Image (cartoon, rainbow over all chains, first blue to last red; front, side, top):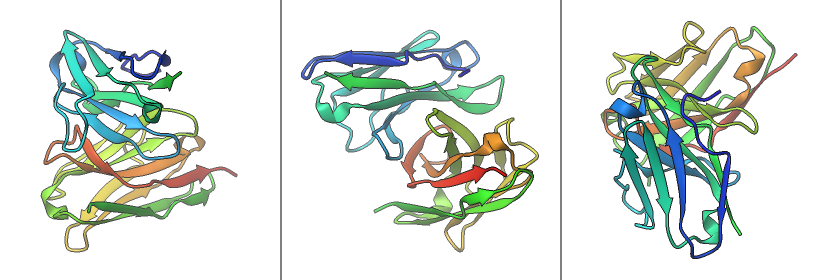
Length: 110
Length: 120
């Protein structure tokens, strides 16, 4: 059971927009920054978003992040078949004193 | 180009030990915190351990504290994970990850992973 809660799966058509939620508590998301990772099938994860809404160099602006209270959201616009992957949120948990991840969300681009 | 190359994985019996290594290149290794993150087969990501730039501070998940030891050799650009008293639930792909600066919260580069299988 993950400390952060994500929907197991989401889907949308090519070209559309999708959002993936990540719910936590005051000990994690509520008082710490959030990051998001993309894991394409058979590959290592890739950092998409850090500090809630910042994109590393090379990440297209189709990917965006936001945070409100104890929840965070990853948004992906202009969906492409190449975006099919598992997406994970992550943050620091002040009570556990560890990095925690969500259980992951599988994105299907129909 | 940043490269992280893990090695040392394999099959080990419950109660056994393994030492993972991660050879880093393409960046100034001694300027970044480093971490290990694992992923059990078909499961999500689990943070395992992190080490500060100098190696003076180490951090562990509760599930491995007291059994695993993280270390680094900045002269050799290498990160290590000594794993003792291994359990079946430690079976996973272990990724070496470079942290974004000194913060251990973000992982901006990952290795390809090395599989550790704990089974009799």
